[in-house]
Length: 547
Image 1 (tube, rainbow, N blue to C red):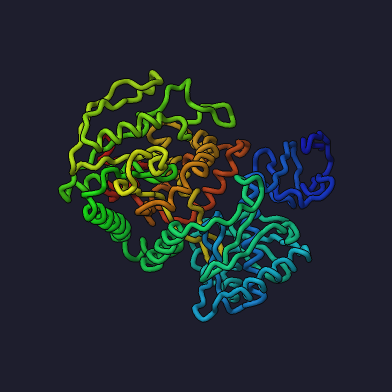
Image 2 (cartoon, one colour):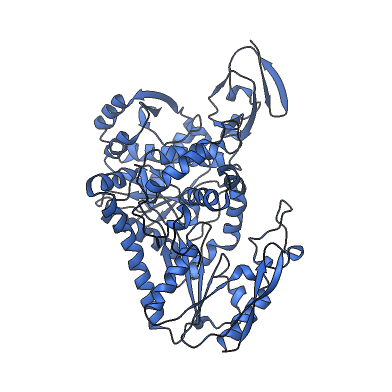
């Protein structure tokens, strides 16, 4: 029986199954993987049915993730060769890179180590060694991990629902990156290693920068936030999925949940104290962060925290300052770009904030989304002990508040900053965490399918890179909105939505990746989640729903 393949502008019939690699004319290393009927496949995959084949490069997000996972495999292999007794851990870090953490305290990283690792990695790349994929039973995997003292992989193994385990072999080195891989080490020519004490940063090509390695940009505030998140995760045993599952099993759901919520309460108390100490100067409290960070619930909880200190904040929505639809700029797809600061009436917002802070009475606008324009809103005057809370993606952008003196503004950046790994070599993506939050929330409150949310996510991400991430470094306070138990709760909401996405959907690769991560978490009921928890903003049941 023959089958037809559409690929690289060709349509051909085949009688025998064919490897994707064998369809490529020219240099196969120009590609990382392929979508076969919208399902991501390794280049070594053999096709035997009618299919549309799209070859992907590092300009594509799906390919970038595979390239990055393959690089982690390569670097882990290098350390195994050069420093076999040294354990390393990968985690996502500043400048869109991967941080290589040394887990052995007696081993110090210096420029000589970085050069040795770089030289060995490039040597392996030049040798173009094959990454051979094979399958073993869970019992066989247990024996392999035990023999090689891969205890972090042993810890996660009991939570794998499948009866088999995938492994990759390269000249006797075995590892599994919970991801597809490139066919061989020769595909991994583009990377940079940088000493970033006390570890190493691994930079790699990114889809959002056109398949190039972005210029290094240090972000000390973000770095400190990640360091604090990791420290807290270690203290509570929540730095790995297995650790989280063990806390739930051994300490109980309620205790672990309350430990996580207590951390949020403590941060709010610390934040409230800082604002109270300088309340004679602070007139504007600005709250911003990327999508699905929990800004709305946080702003409500911050208001309550300040009220408990005798401070009476007033909330003003930046969304009420949208320009009429006809004046909103368009994005690269020709659609209204509501993520752009140019979609807001910057001059009016500046003037309103200045007048309020000066003690004047102001007629605020109210944006009517049905009419697509502003209408008159409430009349407001604020007192000396009534700071204004503004919340939105542009709240930390000084263009929005140029008329307000710097010392009168207190800037808060909020985002979930998780430092959770499946095992030492496989970190969980912060972006995937936020995407899961948004999928659950959009279905709950907007009746939007997971496909709709995934479909608009690239546009959301473009807006974040353009308008949000750089503002973190100017923040007075960074609030980590991650709750270590939340994926255990969201699992029951997210999995059914993701499972509805058909295998031939263009969004299936994303759904498959998210399912692959979620399946390792234990289920946890949501009945004990407090009504004021930030998580309630996404799963429902928030006491702030009508505020």
